Length: 152
Image 1 (cartoon, rainbow, N blue to C red):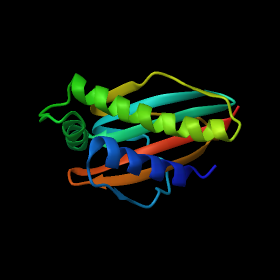
Image 2: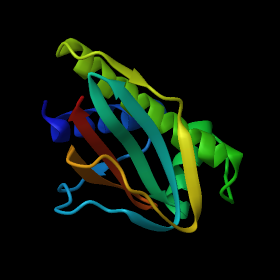
Image 3: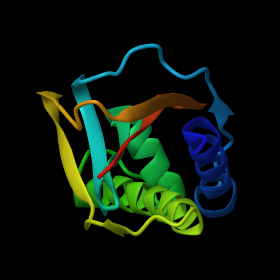
């Protein structure tokens, strides 16, 4: 499975069709990011024949811009609308990845979205997993889409 291609195509399609923001894809990161400041992270767990997680990590200003465009209303602070929108973005991306895995003969179940936000937090995920972290840029700034996956 080409994780980079799947993440790039899914994120681009969702932003073009659902969020209506122009998006630029960056080069995948060389190292995983585990610490975040003044950010919002939407996380979906994967279980079954593959396990892992998909996450969207967005600085507060980027998360508010995504939410504003997604909901068609001005958002001035990180609130339930923002955490719901970033959680739903994660859910849509994970659904796309699940479809690709299902087509490859894998049986994967997705968790409900979880959202983490705050002034400073860190996340540790699946050990020894195949992973990719892709930066995407919109006018408000850059956010990351992360996929970690390991065959069970």
